[in-house]
Length: 323
Image 1 (cartoon, helix red, strand yellow):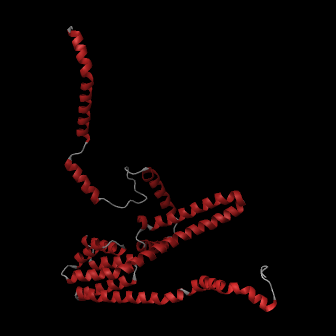
Image 2 (cartoon, one colour):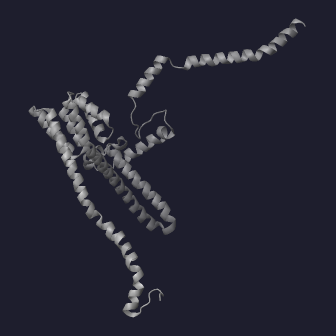
């Protein structure tokens, strides 16, 4: 075998192996060039933990989906433009309502009015398109206007329902939170540390409000002012009373532990009184289903079979062809 044949034979055998090795080397070098270092990965993980927050309609994160990157900003801009038609004199009341509802979706008062108008327009347009082929232009316009007004009012009812539900949750969680806060202060913890322990113990609207107030204290807001803001955001009468008593006692130099103990006992007493009140109302509330649903059925079952005999006895009248 001559030298040319030997080179050709070995070349045909080694060319796939060499190609595979070069390809693997290229992939490895590309990975080493593009992959971040271990320290950079740790920094990114820590930053992502610190920057974890709730996205709103205006979030334009390029890593999100098509809706978040394209339609989200367009929808947010449309809502903001529609919200400019809102009356300025009701902005403060709307801001307070949104705070007491827990700031749904992080909406501002202008954006909330924009959402209401957008819902009203969407409901009106859908109603018009559905009714137009059936009843004509005039009735379709009337029905669309009524439907739009209904959608506008339903959003207000939704906000009020969210406020009522959040207040009820805060009202129910307040006695237990005050008990634990009292225990923490009497055990020797500072007031801020006791608030932190309460926030770590439960996750509900009250503990989130306490954690937010604690964050405001840590950034330099006076404690009395942070507590007033928390009471305003919650809008619960018992919490307002507790905050007012706590602020007054701190101004007079009284012991916080004694004040917390007295307030916790009073809140527990109020909760027991509310439970007793609801229990007393149960009998009155049962009258309506009893009269409307239960008594008619009992009357039909008990008296129904005897109606034909009663009719024959009174005059031989036959009901429904019965003998």
